[in-house]
Amino acid sequence: MTTRTLALVGAAGGVGTTRLTVECAATLARAGRDVVVVDAAFATQGMAAYLGQRVDGDATALATGAAQIGETLHEESGHLPGRLAVCPAQGPFEQLARAKTHEAAERLGDQIAAASLGHDAVLVDVPPVAANQAVAAVEAVQTVAVVTEDTERGVRALARQRERLADVDRPSDCAVANRAGDGFVDADLTVPESGVRAPRSCPVCADPPGEGAFAPAVAETVETLLGVSLELEFGGQGLLTRVVGTG
Image (tube, rainbow, N blue to C red; front, side, top):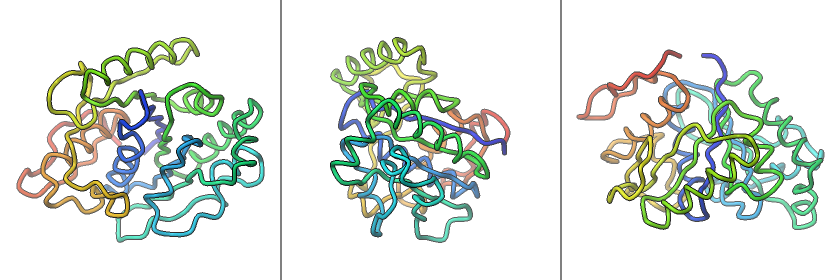
């Protein structure tokens, strides 16, 4: 599999971008892929909540030059066929402030590119594009998808985020309606609400029996965004039939 790099950009805060990024990565690891997740959401630092371990090196250390990508990866425990390693953002305020400069953002982009060496996929959790590190993240990847919630608020947020991405000359490649149900958002892909919400109980896509339509929808999202065929099975639903590309 040629290395794929993907930024999942939140159209607004609270739309579930971090959770979706984690679940997409777990889906890839379940299919035997070697995956790295980089957290560019420095302000919220939500990715660390999905790790059941102490965070030492982190993404702000990458940006400030205090660490290299290999020193900041935290292996997700479990028995997945592939490897899932996460670089969360969880640094002290002083380091966080330095990580948001233009120079630091350029270093972050370089480290995202470095993460693609020797891995099958790199996924980046990106906040709404309004800061240097978010711009650097979308410029460092092959594919940019905007994640929004399937509400009227989500419709407005998606439009704003598409405009911001166009302003930095990196238009979005795809729109994902998260927690879909009512059909407010005209999106390329939809992912329903998961029955599991607590971060420490995630990712459910690492072991998806009982998750209904959620895990297959995440797998379809991964296949479409990265142009791969994962050939995963989901209980009584059988083989995931949508094949978008080849690995």
